Amino acid sequence: MKNILQLFVLLIGFTSFSQGLTLGDTSPRPLNLEGGKIYQDGVQIPSYQVKKILASNLHSLKVYKQAKSKETIGTTLMGLGITLTVVDLAIGLFSDAKYPTAMTYAGVGMVAVSVPVLSGRAKKIKDAVQSYNEGLKNTSAIELDLNAVANQNGIGIQIKF
Image 1 (tube, rainbow, N blue to C red):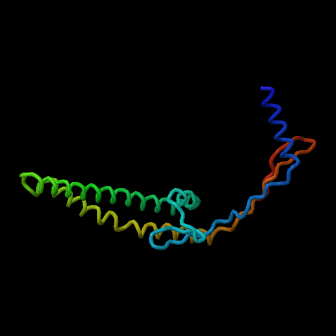
Image 2: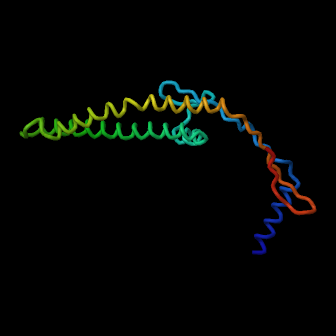
Image 3: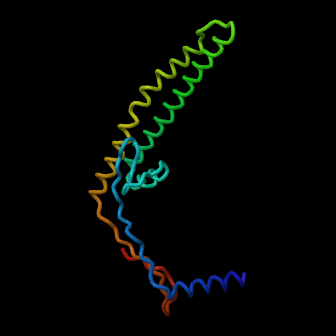
């Protein structure tokens, strides 16, 4: 316990004599949608990062998550449908079994259902990006200055907006 307390006091001493930490440009930047991929400042942003960026605009985040859910469900249905159809075709070709069976019809049905599910996802992603970018125009940038301070009254953190 004594070592932890000494370490804590030492770290506080370092921070009290340091210059203030000024956070860099924290203003949100617009997103661009090109070819189904989302870019920010010319760099492609992965899906998990897009969710973090869109967290500041709840409507955009909701629409984006709906689009990703549609993509997941549609892709799963299409993959299962194609797999069922190909497996049944292989069974029919390499054995004396009757072809087509219910497995082929189920596979074709899954593929048919996946097409309308997948069709709306691109529009939803586009709507999410547009909504986020419009929300940026309506908000002003917040400037934040964070400092560690120490005086005769004690030590603390100073945040200036």
